[in-house]
Amino acid sequence: MKSTIRRALAVLAVLSNTAPAAPASAAAAPLRADHPIIGTWQLVLPDGACREIYRMHPDGSSLVTSAQEVAESSFEIADQPDPQGYYKQVDTIVKDNGKHDCSGEVTQAGHVSTTYLLFHPGGNMFLSCLDRQGKRCIGPFLRLRGAET
Image (tube, rainbow, N blue to C red; front, side, top):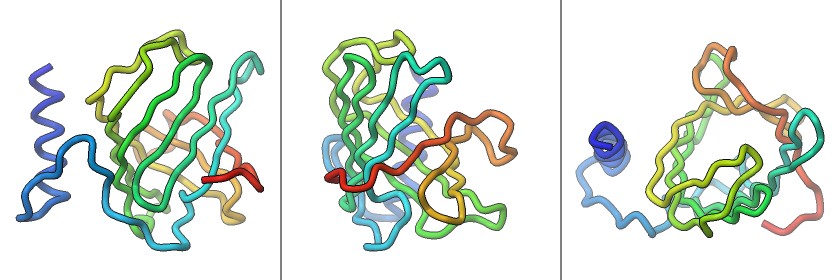
């Protein structure tokens, strides 16, 4: 628990520079209008038994549905990819309905995760990785056209 708090404080310090930290329920900084993450994405589990829908909003907020779970989060994502092509994303769960997701887990409000997103050049899919080596990734996340953000 203490390491999670320390990590969250470190991320907030870096992201806020010298400005005071925003409350956990506040949305993150707005994204540029053409940022590739903006939109609605779907992840289908390999066996096809469950799917997750990610609605990524330009204001840095998201709404995720996964099985019975509905979660809201605030996220920060790099404006441009790093030299390896990854966008660093830090996501903080703001609200969760307390129900099980596709993995059978319940996500707690306040949970912070850092991932590295690698977009396909066409912009319609990406992988979400735990590191920049691309060895521990899930995906592909597929863009859903015509879905509201």
